[in-house]
Image (spheres, rainbow, N blue to C red):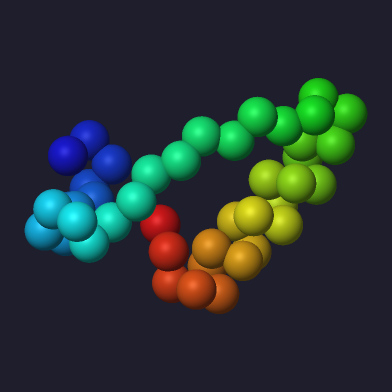
Length: 42
């Protein structure tokens, strides 16, 4: 609710946790965000 995101019905979404290397996390986050946007994910 705080993020303004409405989840679909149960079973139609997923969540995850990523553990990133401190040295490369900025590059990894940028790549992940780009791919997520291309796939219309939030």
